[in-house]
Structure formats: structure tokens, C-alpha cells
Image (cartoon, rainbow over all chains, first blue to last red; front, side, top):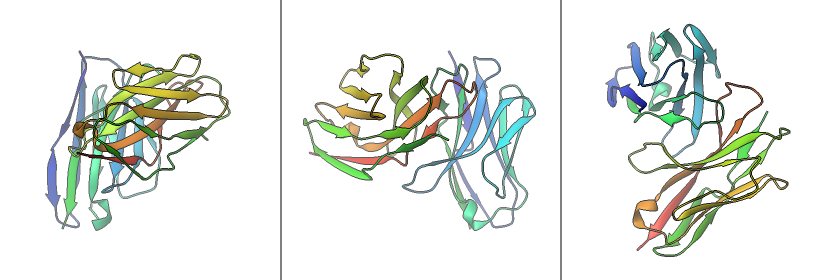
Length: 112
Length: 116
């Protein structure tokens, strides 16, 4: 069966520090991968999605970047975090276009 | 571009009663999928139910059912015999089948409270 792993679960970082959040999927090949951000009590904002290795689509201009170095690995990064980067980050995957997206457990990021 | 609207930011229901959450969407496509996701306080996103646009029959999963009105572009979620564990944010989502790899389009969510 397919599983998605996202880590860390919680992260507290100072303003100006770098960021690396990692997401990996097991049990499937060539998944579509997604990064979302969710502010407290709010909806999901799509940040990036990828349909293959090295292929990244950015949905909103921001302080973050994404990379897909391997088929089932998706990384969210920043060189210098801002206070506004605080939030809950969710990774998701899907395979066939008629299938739903499946989500990881999320990372709670607090910027101090 | 497709949009999904959930007009009820918050809803409440008495335990054991029935509640309906509304969702409307805007699209010019004829082939698509619709989903309802539940996000409890743990913030994990859980798929509740899905509906294929080409199917006239409404999807059902135990106490959860949908009322899919394709012409009206409406996709409401009915929760029967509500339980305390149903308290969560509920998100309606749309997925196009015309463009192979497009992400889901989510509504802004409805927060459901269940009163004991």
C-alpha cells in the first residue's frame, strides 16, 4: 500500500534562518506531488506541485522554493524565513487523475 | 479557472441529528471529480467521500452521503446520526479530468461543531 511521510512534525525557527521540509511517498511510482500551506483556521493554499523529477510549478510568488530530486521525494525550502512563513504545511500525492490527493500528517512551522 | 465555494464558514449540529454542508463550484467542463475532506483538530486531511461527475447516483459512505446536482453545480454533504468525532473542518474539492495533472481546487472550508 502507498504511504506518505512528512517531517518534521513540528519546527520552531528564528527569522532569517533556512528551512527544509521533506516529503517522501512509498509504494507508488511517478506520483504527482504537492505542497500546501494552511494558516490557523483557514483554507489550503497550494504552493507548489510537481508532475515529475525536476518539474516544479509554483502557484504563488513567495519566499519559498521546492525541489524534486528523486521520483518520490519533494522538498520545500527557504534561504531566509520570514514571520509570514509561519503556518501548517501539508504535502500530498496523487497518481491517476481520477483519484483523490492523499495527504501527509503535516508540519507545524513557527517562526520566532 | 474552476472555483469552489463553501458559503457556511461555521455550522453546528446536535449529537445524533443530521446536518448538511453546502458546496457549489464553477466550471465549464463536463468531466470531473468532486471530493469532501475532513480535517479534525489533529489537522490530518482525511478523504470522506468522492463523486464522479458522470455518475447520476449520489455517493454514500456509511453515515456520509452527498447530494450532487450537476446542472446546479452543487455538491452538498449530509452527515447523519452526527457523532462527537465528526467535529472538524470540512473541505469541498474539485478535480478536472481534462487536464491530466491539475491539483485539486479547494473551498475555504466549513467548521462543524457537534453539541452533546
